[in-house]
Length: 352
Ligand code: 5AD
Ligand code: FES
Image (tube, rainbow, N blue to C red):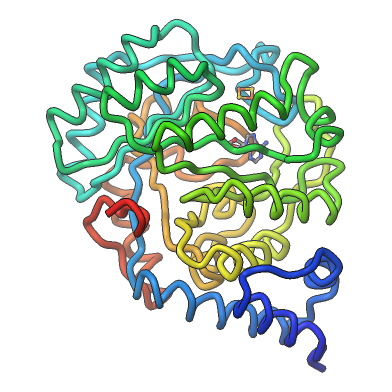
């Protein structure tokens, strides 16, 4: 049986891109299978208004597994002595981007732990080198919390996009996921600085992180409405055996694609990836994400030899494949959904 109220709520969410908190709570807590199918159909229609059948590719280069932080959920936290550490040189990173370019990538995402061994100038130098070698490509940074002056320097060097998930907007919940030296205030300050500098900004959360409540998720939706990010990255929390959260339950496929559908209706033109974590909790997770309104995928371009060392959570997929295999595999997976990957920078519509 369809829950009429939820159908009405989905219609209202699509029409207004917003809903009162109590209706969002109902959508998060009481969706039948029919409601979900209705949500995903609407989410696909909205994404096709803005992006047609196109799926954008981002080549992810995990260039360092060193991290000064100690987030309780993360496998590369500094206290994890079992984590294998590596960092790539500029030359190695440029090899990745050359390989990626030949495979049709036009966006490179440089991601790492907060590794202080790269100076601001070194990061800028790497960004400038990629932009010079591949002027038709975008460079996205995902390297954590920095000062405004550092964000300005990266931007001036040619980085045009930045990913920094807030993880949770709620200060109390944030404090349960992070050690005391990290704060949601600073995380929000970073996101605000990035927006003001002119980056295309990505924020996001883990779905089903320990102690997350529906009200936390609603607070995140409100925060994101105010921030107006160009990208929203979400994936299920997945435990890592060598972290304090080793015994915590993982987030679910259902909750994640459910939230993807809601995000697509609330943020009609947002860039929304079907993430590696989603592909890790279910063999067809990314395909289901695309069919729930996602329009971006981020195959791994890191050198094969270091892949398994960037273990944020247990069971991470794609750690044994060459970049070319990952790219072909992704193409097949997307084709199976009726969408197709395109060779494009894939900027947000407001930044074209
Ligand atoms: N499970 C799922 N996602 C995780 N991340 C970090 N650790 C985990 C985990 N155990 C996510 C965080 C971070 C992004 C790079 O990876 O949301 O922002
Ligand atoms: Fe590195 Fe959290 S442990 S960002």
